[in-house]
Length: 473
Ligand SMILES: Cc1ncc(COP(=O)(O)O)c(C=O)c1O
Image (cartoon, rainbow, N blue to C red; front, side):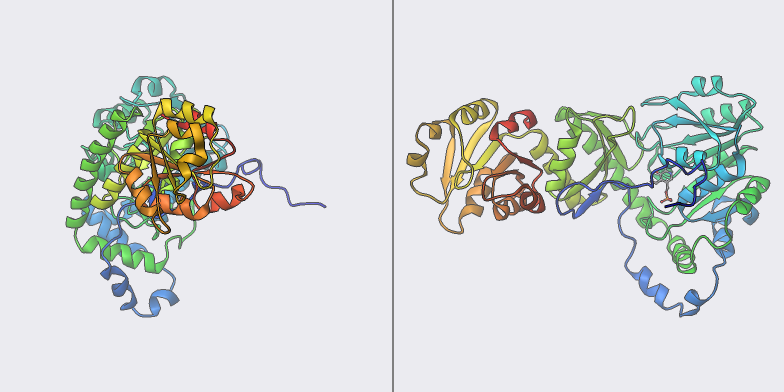
């Protein structure tokens, strides 16, 4: 069968997608989103009447409002469908085959895609952490350099560039566009928007997706020299942001920033706690000025899966060079959710006890004794004769709770007083584990298929109890 052929720029590019972790997620900390905006916002939208749906959008009122806030002329502001569209338009407006964009690596993963789609070439400069690599970027500037992208705070590391770095780059490449992505600037020690706007060749890209908690609206904006904004305006469609989104964004901004400031300061506190907790638990966190912390783990895939089994989604980057075994964890911006995250990390990374569902998991003496050397081994069962049934293996268990019918929850809660993992071949017991904060680990038996156990939210499904040894801290 013949197919239409895509352009070389698209061929081989996979659509953006993030594999969700296992488990039923009810705390999403993988997208760097903010907390929900005030509930009244939606009610205000319905008061606008059906014309908000009938008419093509007009972004000018929002561009005027943003221009007033930024102290620039309205012609210097373009509202875009998220910061994403601003980055895409910058690439379309300034790149073509033979032109280059210099960007840090690792950085926001959409930038290399937009460069490629525009036919340009990406020059990646390593910036794993710490100071912005200004010297290395300067050394890569050539007559082909059309754009220098500075993402500050950088995603996924949270590292920042300084005002001096922006001025140096602007001076060194006056004919290139300095694309300053400030998606997380509200969380940083210094907001570089004014610095960028004072430069003749820079644009500042901002978004309402993060600190303002409006990622679902898809509203971002870019501000800079009028001519540059004019070219970016030309490099895309006229109605990329819907009328309801424009209206809601304006209402959100007009309501004032007091709640945003309170949210930002909560996030900054959480960030410090998360950083020190991760370090204490043996991970290697990177100093961040954004609303997330990136850390390297011994086995990031396991940590991601185990957090997923407790309902918490975090972001991993399995295919990105330099980010092997790294996880990016968004600060929740909510006291209860933050406590839950810190406790879950402790359960996963500092497992003190493995509790085995002795009614369903067969335990060989070698496995029991090997595990007992690594952590406290506990068991739970509904069989009063369990010790006799286990014979010599029972000695490896520090405690065996015998729960009457319906008493398993109490037995588990007892075992899970410290950081605990629970091993069972029963879907309901695995669900129960999560409800008491213990990491559920499935074990396949003749009665339990891996699919059932995954479905019940198991962090991992093992075929042999000994496989726990590799996962234990
Ligand atoms: C650095 C950076 N820039 C831009 C964006 C895009 O944000 P938006 O939701 O406004 O499109 C993101 C989103 O994660 C980001 O991390």
